View 1 (tube, rainbow, N blue to C red):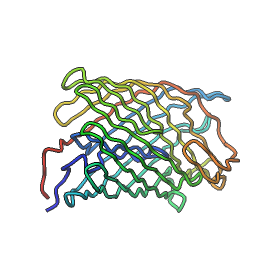
View 2 (cartoon, helix red, strand yellow):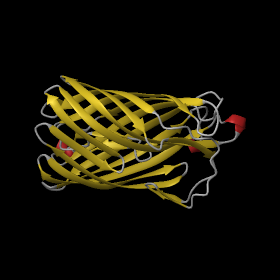
View 3 (cartoon, rainbow, N blue to C red):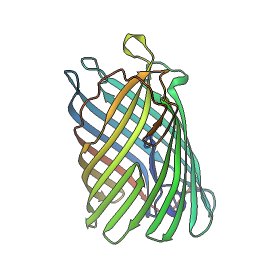
Length: 312
């Protein structure tokens, strides 16, 4: 019989597809698995840089993860991510509603006491869902290798690749996870950093950075022109966290850094991108950027302890 959520050292704990272009995940030595995560963030009144008007940015994310242990050394990684972004792309026009529907399917394999790896396929729909065609579909994959130094310390190496609408996109990844009685550090460069301190058993304070990038097909573009929108969220902030049994709640206040929501004609692409390095980028931006601003974010987690088992 298969067992759900048994060993965090042998399974991926959270995959927040979206990071690097759209994917955020962590492979840690924690003693829990985040089965369900719900995020809500809001940034209000962001003025356009070169034109009159402003844009609010509102985002919902629902992320589910279901690791299923197949054997002592193999764990099936599965899950689903839903995202809704509401933003005004052009001054004076109605806001657009963008969606990500992302499946996650992969395998975590333990090779030795020190080495393990996770391989995940990430097919997704990313668009305004006004209609549906080949430009609404993208495909990504991620490979992460983990080297465990001690029970409270591990390193991660890997890469993320996705067929973005702007062109092929590759992000090399390097991470470290370290935990003491009160301090916890979880870093995956260049996409995330989380350092937190436990003030009490159920209360902690933390510092977080996240840098997400992704693209959406705009079927309903103004004037009938086929376009795509690239979203780059770089957010830095502090947060408070509480846990009540398996329920965890976090509230963050922060600020965006170099954030943009840019539109391009659907056939206006770059040749290749490696993280922030863009090769052959001669694209013409169609809209105007708006300024960085304050970001308020709340997160609700259902966290499953790994010392509990459930048979199927």
